[in-house]
Image (cartoon, rainbow, N blue to C red; front, side, top):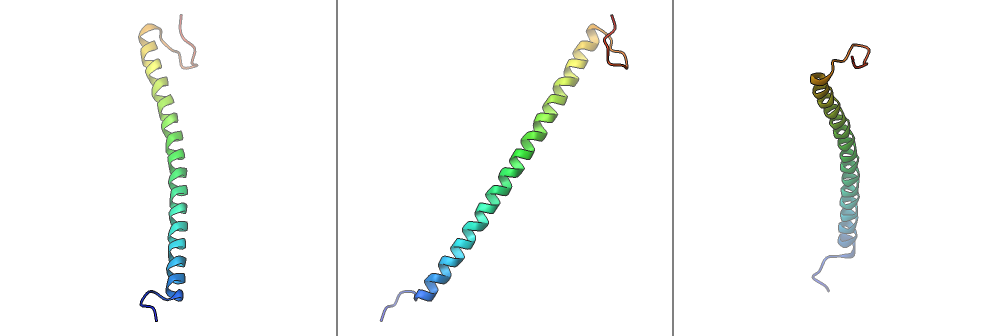
Length: 72
C-alpha cells in the first residue's frame, strides 16, 4: 500500500488548481481592460491639458472671441 495521496485526492487538487488558474486568467483580462480604459482617459486628459495650455499661451498673444475665432 502507498502512503501518498490517492487518485481521487490528486484529481480534486488538479480541479482546484485549474479553477484557480482560470480565475487568475480572468483577473488578468479584467486588469488589462481597466488598463486600456485608464490609458484612454489619460489620453483625453492630456489632450485637454494641452488645449488649455495653448489657449492660455495664446491669450497673451491674441484675444479669442466667444465664437472661437482669434481677434486681429
